[in-house]
Image 1 (cartoon, rainbow, N blue to C red):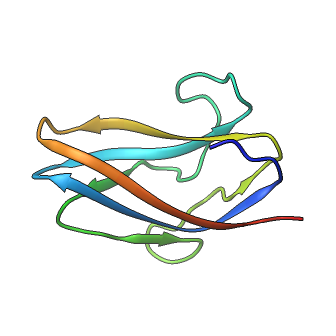
Image 2: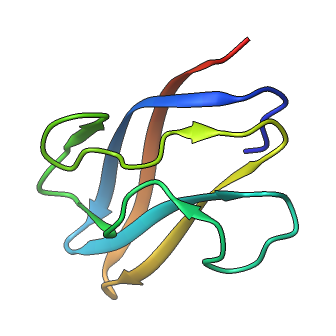
Length: 99
């Protein structure tokens, strides 16, 4: 997703299907940045599985470390590892534009 205005993440909920898990992170940077270069939302990767559906917020367990995305930045989902039987991963990302 590319943002036209600065955007602040407020919560992210993940859902995965299949019998195992995937490790992931969200990374934002200027468009054209490749791979894992950019700013990670979490310092450590998170795990998505079909047995747990956590919601990550700005405080508490699994809190997001970097939540403000600059004007024009692109937010990418990066899968860092997955099991052979993971079916899919979906993220519900909530936030607000900073006008």
